Image 1 (cartoon, rainbow, N blue to C red):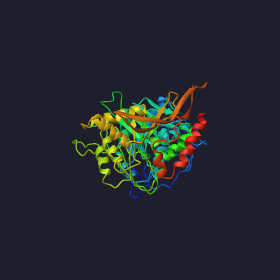
Image 2: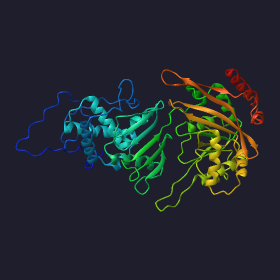
Image 3: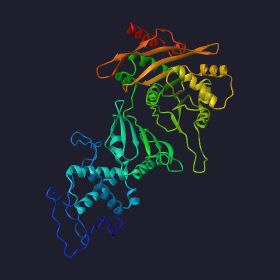
Image 4: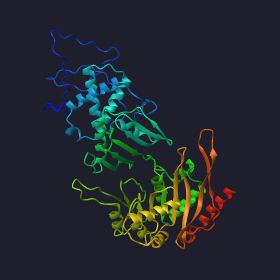
Length: 505
């Protein structure tokens, strides 16, 4: 069906692999470990029958390769002979199939066609392989042609938080907060760059020598960053921040110890009563995950507009408009910045504006939106503490060229931001919410804040895991009390704060 030399009947012809001509061609001895299987289909009479080959039994379509019945170790190191065999089979496959015809098929059908052709190539070239090795080779080549190559087994694992590719020979992953090296590698730097281009092209972006830095995303929302040669000296550097297939909730964060049950109750109320929230934290601290969790408590009849560099937020509300920035084209034109999106949001009748990551002058437009009738807006920012978060907001406003007095800027910040939630990744790899802090007001030129919840580290266990607890600072009536009463949540808030104080005692 997909042979480049197909006949009129539409039956796929196998590639012809002819050995060098000699005076006398010896007959090929069958491989002892391989038993012939029945052919898949009847061949037309004008075709020579294909040699009997061995193929592993096909899996059912809904059974992944990593099931307990057929355990595989996709991250283990493989021998040089395996990669040499794979290269030969892959080259023969590319010479055989018509990629333009293959692209017209759905993924499952295309995968089955490739598996069938590769099985034939292995039989004709008479590679001595065990059933397990042949199955691995089939899966790898299908991933190379249709998916993300060697990355596919890693993307299928739900326990991996980050995938870091440093050139074609080094692939690292983060599991349970710890970074470890895998045995996975790419055929060469060109294959790695091809996969990077395949990823970014799906969202209408490009990465090459003229545009060597690119942010993109996978279909599941996972964040992707690529930096290609000549900026990356040892081959393309690819970083993927994976999101779990099952979206986390605040209740699950409680089970993981990221926040106490009482603290989670306070966060639910904060999301419900339309407090303006800034989530602060370092890289990999869980800011975006926490933002996703908080948005679960937005009323389902509210119109929410999200603005992101790479669309990764996955809100569950029915009335959500998702916007994404756009880089400039080859001529350096057509760029749409985050500030352009936030400005345009104000014309779209939003009730809440969610900014995935605030990193520049768009913070001023977000603050303006927060205190002009768009209560409940949220965003994330990179900083190491609530106080530093406020300083960074001031700095980003200054970077935008706004020549405002410092006191005026601070008054805008105080009038806009209600709550700062600090997330941190601790030295043992665990992620914790370390502060829930209110922005109360100003005394002179100084912004006044007060902590509602803190995370105190007490020590570590014999395995090096940090031991700590979330404690109340004793504030029984926070500054957003009146807002909670307006939404009928004051009794629930009082109960949560009282339970937190009792736990502290």
